[in-house]
Length: 162
Image 1: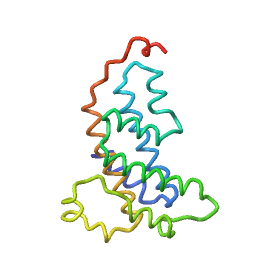
Image 2: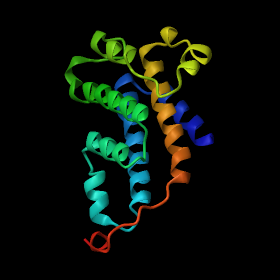
Image 3: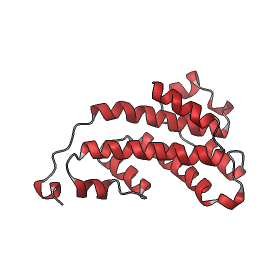
């Protein structure tokens, strides 16, 4: 939990662009770690399942392998889309208040049961940045729990040495 608090502190002082890019980088690193654990010892499998620079493919593969759920994958892909808007819109001075970013954040699916959305968090009252960070934090939290439960897949002998 201390790790999550340190990250929250770091993002508090970060620009909107930095916040979006760094948050997704943290999630990407954690997803790669889960995939690596799941295909322990299979270098080629890791390179194909979670290749650097192909986060959307890694998300799809992790979902296909049952390493992440459908709701989590949907939210993760939405975060990637927002991150890409920031990363490729450098000259536009984008913020979470920019209309197209705010709309993407408004439609951002929280990977939690409906009861949590209505009883615990009033998602209508969240700022776009808060909704982005809460979604990223929920995914990271679930990934951290899931990491401890990942059991390596049996890897065919031929893939272990490729």
